[in-house]
Length: 192
Image 1 (cartoon, rainbow, N blue to C red):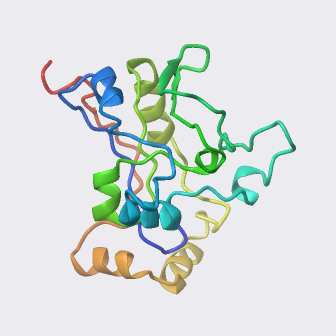
Image 2 (cartoon, helix red, strand yellow):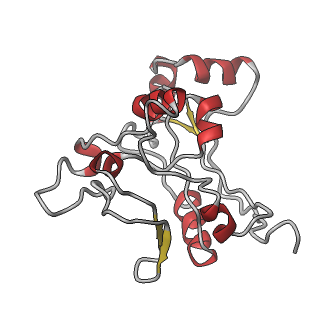
């Protein structure tokens, strides 16, 4: 979990489920489409408010015509969700131009969470890569100079706190933790 720009908590999670990815695809459990505003008005509003990608400096800005930004938008059209063996990730159903800008979501979770999410099917080949990417992610040392102990403290003390971050502090949760220790993370499914 991390706080980005002192806003809501940003969580990285991995879930093991009893259904196969093929079963979940057949049930359309993870979607990347703009719902019909008549048939699913509440979900349509949540997707419009939280799941539409807008190119900015973080993704390299709008891509030239025929190309995608760093985050892969606009997505390619696809009549169905499938595993792309060349890139080793899933391509989601995308049949309308509006769908090309929708970040994948789980409808029931989006209705409860009411905030941005990026939920993806993850193959066993990509699981280790995903976990390693976030575990090995360095702290933003460009924001402050760790070698000057007081400067680090001044930065943290002077930082604007968002409501979620403040609640973490009130509840005694850890906000920032650095360590040289090694922690073993079980990556086998619970049934193993």
